[in-house]
Image (cartoon, rainbow, N blue to C red; front, top):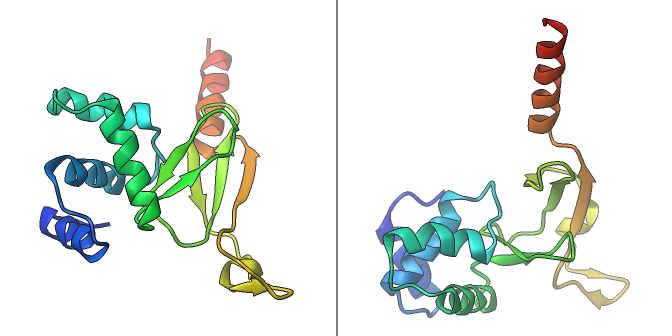
Length: 150
C-alpha cells in the first residue's frame, strides 16, 4: 500500500496524469480501501463529506482516466454494479452472496501468468468465486451461539 501523498503524485505523473487534488484524493481512497473494492457511490459518498465541491461526474471521469492508464481496474461480478480495484495485476475475486463484500483471493491459476492462449493475446483475466465470506460465517456462528445461550 502506498503510504504518502508524494508517492501518489509520482504514480499519477508516471502514468501521464496531472496530480490534481481530486485525483489524489480519489486515488488515495482506492489505495486505502483495497479490501472493499468500492463503487463510484461509495467513493463519492465518502469524499464529498470532506470535499463538498466534488461531483459524481468528477469521480466517474477520474476513474475512467485511471482505468485507461491502468491505475485501477473495473470489477463487474454481479452485473448490477461496477467496483474499482487498485490492484491491476491478474487475480481472482470472491463475492460474498450475503454481505456483498468483494475480496481479493490468492488462487494459483496457470492462466494468470500467461500473455497468450493458443495464439490469442490475453489482455484481461477475470476469475470470480461466489459464496459466503468468513466474516458472515463467523457472524452467523456467533449469532447461533448467542441464541443457544438464552
